Structures are given as C-alpha cells and as structure tokens.
Image (cartoon, rainbow, N blue to C red; front, side, top):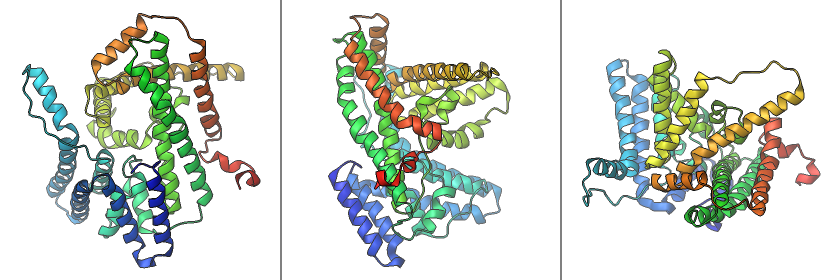
Length: 440
C-alpha cells in the first residue's frame, strides 16, 4: 500500500478515528496493529521477519544491559547482528552473490538461484533494530522493558518501508510517551504532507515516464535526450525520496512523533562531503557511526582512512540494491570523498559578497555535475547499459533541442522554488512563516 494510493488515505483515516476515540490504555496496541496491517497488506508472510527481528533484538537488548561478562556481551551482539544480516542477506543478496559467483567461475547455463521475493522495507528496519542493540552494547542507550513499545519502534508504519532509519534514542522515548493523535503540531504536519505529496505525486511521478522513455530508447534518440534523461532522473529520485520522507514526517507528527530530517537540500551542496551530510542523512550517519568509525575511521593514517571510506561507500551502494551498478555508484562516491580529503575545500578570505556568492554557485554546480555522473549507474539496469549510455554521450549525435533545454530549466526552477527558501532560512517548515490568512 503506497502513500499515494486511495486505500492508504482510507487506512490513515481509520487509524486517526481509532486512535482519537479508542480507549487510552489500548492506543499503543492500536498503533502496533495498524502498523502490522499496513505492512501485511504488502505481503502478510513477511510479518514473520519483522517479528523475528523484534523478538531477537528486544531479548538481546535486555540481556546486553544486565550482563557484566564482556565475552557474553560480544556473543549476544554477534547473535543480533548475525540474525539481522542473515535475513537481509538471504532475501536481498543471495541470488546476486550466487549469480556473481557463477559468472566469475564461467559456469554457463548453471544456476542455483532461488525464487525469492524481496520483503519491502527490510533494509530499513534491520538497520534500525541493529543500531538499537549496538547502542546498548556501547552503553549509549538503556533498553526498554516494554515489548509493546519496542515492537512499535520497529514497525512504526509512517517510516517502516522508506525510512528515515531512526535511532532508538530519538524514536523510542516518543513511542513510550505515545498517547494517540496530536493536534499540537497539526499545521506542521499539514505543511510536510503538502510538500511531500507535491514532490512525490505532482513532480516525481510525472517525471518518471519521461525518464523511462529516454533510458529505454536512448540509442535511437539524439544524445541531448540521454543527457536530459539523466538530469531529469536526478530530479525524479530526489523528489521521490525526499517526498516520501516528508510524508513520513508529516504522518508521524499527526501521532505526536518527530522523525529526523532525512534530506536537507542536497543539490545545494558545496562539496561532496557536504552532499553526504544532506542526502539520505539517516543512512549516511548510520554508515558513519556503525561501519566507518568501527573500521577505524580516520584514526590510523590516510591510507587506512581511505580504505575504510571506500569500504563504507561500496557497502552503502550495495545497501541500495543487489547489483554491481549500485556498487559502482558507491565506489564513485567513495572516490569523490577520498579526493576531497586529499584536496580539501579551501575557504576564501575575500570579503567581496558578489565573489563569495559566485564562488559558492560554481561549487554547487560542480558538485551537482559530479553527483549527476553517479546517477547513471544507479538508474541503469546493468553495467552494459551504463557504458553504452556513456558512449552515446561522449560520441555526441544530433543537435541541441532548445525545447528540451527549456523543459529541463523548468524543473531546475521548480527545485529552486521548493528548496531555496528552506536552504536560506534553514527551516523545512518555512511555509508556516506565510501569513495565517494565506494558510487557512
């Protein structure tokens, strides 16, 4: 059940009624049942996977906190991480690794792949539950004594299938204090829902067919349409991801819960490091805190730091999907970040405001172009299409379509209109600054 389906609005309406008028003592139960119904409508069989992660990490979390034995703590943490990664690996990566191994060994006509359906949202909730047990192991968080609260933390439906990947220290205390529908932040919720549905439904969903057409027929089209398709995809994926995040945050606010900001105007980044502090923030910070830093971070010299960085970005690419194209996408970002460390962004001391703004604009454009290059392997179905696409652009064919340039310029203008006010004011709810009569 997608956020933009009519059934979803009916579902949310029923949830609001039940949580508004249901018995106070059962509101957490109603919320949990709503989340399970929401997920079960995708495929009820995969609820068992959520229950496994929930029971295992709830039990291990409590044991980790009370066990003084260091070796036992390590074994408990291993069980948690192994269980979650095994489920994720089996359902998301088993066929990918088997196919890759068969290709590597050159065994033609031989397959051992399974007919496995990918459970929706599994990448999100497995990372979320793992962070819970890891934080307890590190003594950064105390476990909850309520299985009901923890179950709601794992399955909270606004962010279950598309994030953000919440940390227990932010979401779990709010779940513990949950008391039904909140009217305190209704205006904030409406603004986020308005922005989210505008990005997702009005913009991203309408760009998607054009992008699909360009990518499916790029060899027959002039090169300008290949470039246009890539640029349009950069807008499609941003408005889709950030739109979903805004919708999730808006829905959560209706329940009195504040989810983290997941996208913070990434196409206004002035460096690749800045980009990863603005793009999919819940994932990038998760990878930093639970992968890059444990690997050693930047503590053991430049060579080791670069290896840790590249490893993190390669695995971050693979997190997005079981394809070597996603690994290439992560590798490109890893390379960019390594180059940024070697040639750091120098801050100019010139006081001329005009020069400062122009310098910043040039950096934003350059970073966008670098990010744009990485979207090609992300969007392509396989690496052969990626290289054909690159060749079609390098060995340019056809002319320049002015109408197509105007079409691209329109979406650039849309991006500026939506994101620039938030970028300048550093406020995602900038629409609330408008006169009240205009919002009513």
